[in-house]
Amino acid sequence: AAFYNYVHYRRRYAELGSDSAGELAWANESVSAFERCTARFGAEDCALRFESLTRENEETFYHADQLIKGLYALFLPHWRREFAHLLPLRSEEYFASPRAVLGRVLPFLGLPLPASEREWGPLLDGPRVL
Image (cartoon, rainbow, N blue to C red; front, top):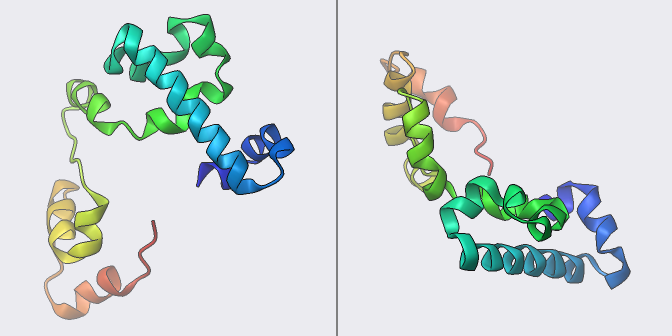
């Protein structure tokens, strides 16, 4: 999605002639750079400090940022240390069972659960987007 939402990615790979070819080139460049980094420094160091580890990483187009943003498992222990009040959620669970997930989210936020089906309606009937 980032390739299509952020114009700088498409501009960088425009010479390839198609968006799909450009997206593939960008993904391959990011993955290759991250794999080279992990071979030297390990996944956690690369996820947390990619562009500061080597000049090559710093020069990688947008520092493999979109790839690294998806490595939640590596960031979660750090987030838990920094934020005492954290509720990790999986979007798959929300889309499969929104009421059950909202039943955890609302109390976590200090909000009451809906008392009736009528009150649940606006929460469950609204659009769900990725």
